[in-house]
Image (tube, rainbow, N blue to C red):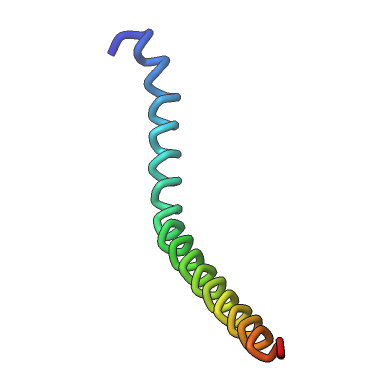
Length: 65
């Protein structure tokens, strides 16, 4: 290997090893994020449904005559 390439090989190899380790460690992060997002969306839909039912119940209870 040429001396100029040898100087680049060490830092590049270290960067590749750090990247591989990081990718291996973050493997479950995406799945966890999707599950949490889905749960939050379901809770938001449930909250909107409850609020809508309460408002509609109050609106039906108004006597206009």
